Length: 427
Image 1 (cartoon, helix red, strand yellow):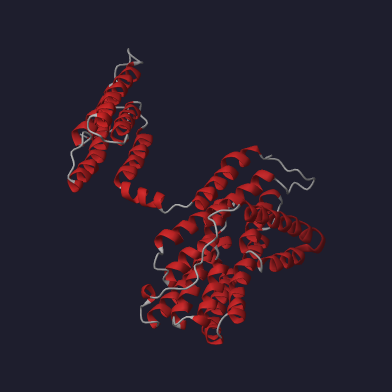
Image 2 (cartoon, rainbow, N blue to C red; image 1 turned 30 degrees about the horizontal axis):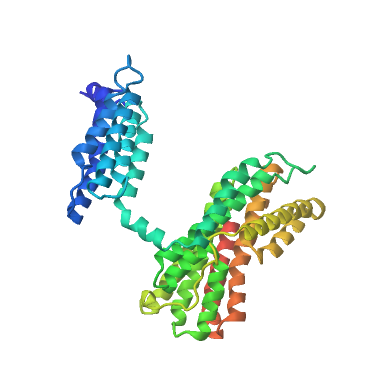
């Protein structure tokens, strides 16, 4: 029995491929049928039709003596879809290519299944399912999508797909530090986090509640969130407990963002690199829950006046500024360590942490890949911006916010920073 099942469920077995093809066709077809029934319309691409197209694609690959059969069948379906489209436009007055393109794509999904590319076929099917299931959401997204946001997306695409491949992958300096490709890759990472944070903030925090804005706003900038909450403490009627919950959530989000950056760009991941941030994030979330409960659970009924959002989801100037700052810190840490031992590098990291934690951490990880650095030294360098940038938030609140808000958040900020330090010392 086991041998029989192992043969059937072999990806190269034709019975298995037919079963997968039918399943993928039914998966897409069911969603189409649901939409037809919900909207009260008749459509040609339902469960049976889509399943047949996928099966045709898979079956066309079974005849090894006719290698061009999939192409011939595809051309036939293409001609049939052209006729259907012509009839839909001129006779039925229906505008749209979705059904016709869906037929072609699902046929190709069947071909992928027949060629043993099961994973790729499933990925394509999932993408098709998303596009068909969330039609109204995509239209709504496009309706609210501004030219400024489209320009930001274009710029991010340019620096990722056009500029990055052209950059040298070898050091341009005699010290082996400055590698343009690696530096620009880090710029893309930070820009992408801010880019998607912008849209999360825009489309998922329409009420501008304190907690939601703190969460998504901190993907863009936890410093911006801190200064905004400080300003709100002076001019709005939001309780200090609720603002404190927002601040601690911003700190937790910053720590989680740092952990993700380390996991992505650390060549040799050490637990000592991420443990302080992990414990600090956990402690910050506990403080968030404490203040949220104390505030009376009204966070989703309170709106903040100032939106924590970039003017654009992406701008080239901030990306270049980050690259410049990153490069300066990269060289500063190298020469600080070379001429002033570890203390020089620690001092550079401390000063730079007031401006930006990400640049210090990422420049340290980049240096560790090229220069022989002790693990404990790298861990210490990473710890400095993690703690300093957390403590700096209290300074912003002291300068920009109400003193009562400062007093309420000072102890939690100090406690979270102390937890990070103790975690580092213990582990």
